[in-house]
Image (cartoon, rainbow over all chains, first blue to last red; front, side):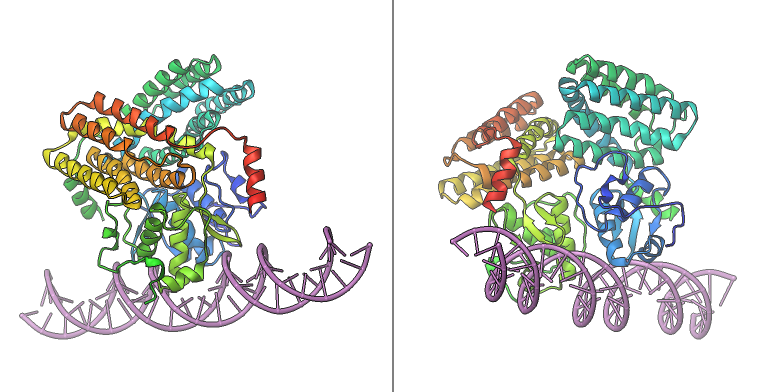
Length: 248
Length: 248
DNA sequence: TTATGCGGTTTTGTCTACAAAGTTATTCCT
DNA sequence: AGGAATAACTTTGTAGACAAAACCGCATAA
């Protein structure tokens, strides 16, 4: 078993349990471990955007045949986490600034609605778990563990989507969050990530007190804050592709 | 070339042009013709929900190797149009009533926003095309061509999403519309589809006059109308799975 | 008569090999 | 010396074959 780069996966009976949060479209297929491992590695910034993902390299890393690598890459391509170029191979996606803006616009529409739903149906147990999540975030931020902080921040939003118990919205939130992770890797400019925890704290209170409107508004402003931490000033699409070509 | 069931596809340079409306995530891969043909067949109710899709049958129908069938089925599974059961095969998806409700809730959130966006940015050319679309719908309804009417009705919503020029929202609308097609196949109770064209007409006017709020409200009420045409009264999830087992 | 166990058949899952396309480096010509 | 064409190499795309799992029918026993 070759296990380089520190990427690991187990072949337990239910391989989808690998992730911290349950996957909305969990299909118990055999290439799931590869998919999950790669997805985790991309989302947690272990593999930077633009990295080439050669099939036989992955094949030897995970010690499975290429037949299991291909569907995993295809699934990641459908998630827009990798870009498949015919006869060229797979690369970790690099969302354009335009895409980044649109993703955050979509989040600004969907996540407030999800937060309101969560505030309506949250059980005491769910709220307790949410507070626990907040604790973890806080300790990760204090320990300056950037990787864990990023993952936990996304996990907080996923947890709210789980509470809302709406499979469609949840899958969209998962989709947008994973792509947001790529956006953060590319366009994050502010290094002081302290501003977030206060917003999360207020959100938990609104949800715990069953105030849907407050939760929605807090989520909306929180997303505006997040967006303001990105460097997305206008560049024309032509410039973007030109610089792409020059850089490459 | 074996072409049964009337399903056809061409292998033109850009196989994605087969569909009436451009696909948001158009990847110029070789299995695209199979994917498009199957997707079209499912959406247009040529293949009813629950139908098994054996790999080698599809392989002989489209006269391609199974290696091209598998990724196509996988992509359709990601779209939630087919369900992949390990070691069992692929089946056309059968959304539960719960899923159906959630899908229409998602549409009720996203499509009004998209309609408002379209009303803001619609060009005269786009409006003209929208009116043309309306004409086609009208003639299909008058000719009692149910299949065409269903497809054109969805096409109208897709056209609005195209005008809005927001790739994320557009892909979500496409996703929700294709799944709505399955829902209609399963749960449609009203056979008089005449009510729709008036709502579409009013929507076009709101978009043409650049009134985003009106467009959003019209879209919202239109979706409520559509939902009321479905038979989705409560059945407990336990009952649902039980009846599933009995029926199968 | 009904239920259970066994075996054949069908269908999916995976691997290996070959073909095609792309990329890179080298060489030759200007 | 610089640029273009060509050749070698690398990587992906596709087909075929084999193995494993599930399904169906039949026989046998309670």
